[in-house]
Amino acid sequence: MSGHGKKRKKAEQFPEEDPEFQIAPMIDVLLVLLTFFMSIASTEVLQKAKGLELPVAKNAKDKEKNKREAIINVFWMTDSGSVSVDGKPKSADLAQMTGYINAKVDSLLSEQEKLNFRVLIRADKQVRYSYLQEVMKACAQAKIVNITFSTVDKEE
Amino acid sequence: MASGGSEDGDLGLQIAPMVDVVFVLMLFFMASAGSQQKEKELGIALPGKGKPAHADVIETPIYLKLEDSGQVLFNELPVDGTKTKELNELRGRLTDIISKFGEKQPVIIVPSPNTRHERLIDVLNTCTAAGVKSLSFGS
Image (cartoon, rainbow over all chains, first blue to last red; front, side, top):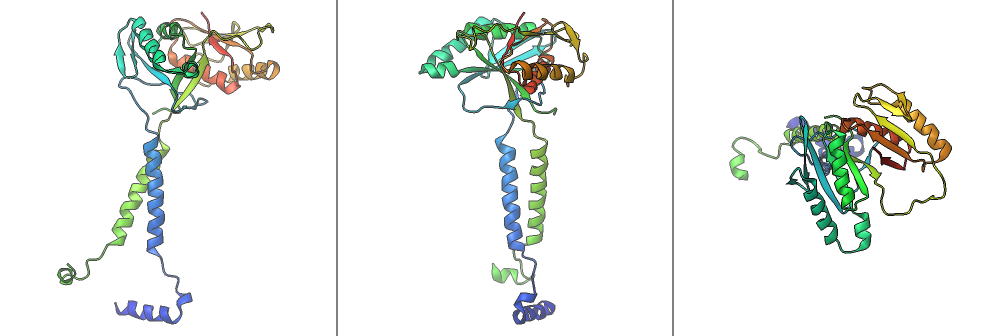
């Protein structure tokens, strides 16, 4: 303590010659950095469905937000597919899915909104094209022309 | 409290451990931000009711066939390997075509029924990278 006292006395005599290590601004900067990394870690949380592994595509576009859309999860179990629309499981009969999408499109008010409506297909990477084709046909029957496939930017 | 603390010396706020904890938290969030998976999208437009933009121009579409083995056929000509994820030869050919005929050049993907979705996405990804805008599926 006596050493500190001497130092302080010296600092008072020559204030410009003693650049002390400032802990408070350092903590400020650290907290700002911490808040920044915390926020980017929590804003882009990938919504995952159990048993669904999305394919990797490096050149895909960023996901558009706040769009009117129906999300179709397409699962694959060894040799057969199953779908869930907006989190609700649908039967293997894809007509039920078409009905659901139709009802969702009809609930929208303006024609412009109906035109912009899109279907986001989140298909497992093992899904065979024959099943995916049926899903796309069902979308076409619901008069949806805008179909988007969901991917991830890198392997887990 | 101040008088109680005077017995064991000054119990002030300990800065050093707090800085340690903040550092550890920051490292954790920095590391998790770097390895984060992000969902992206690849779009196509199914044939709809709308009138094509250049209905009077006769265009010859490019057919990309996908075989069960994963082999891609560019107008019946095999390109790239069956397992390679980066389809560089296909990308080169598509980029050439797009630079000659414009991005409206239609490309039709014809996958076999047993093609895996992963392979389809590889091809769609290559088409996007080459700047193909007019994409559709055929059978």
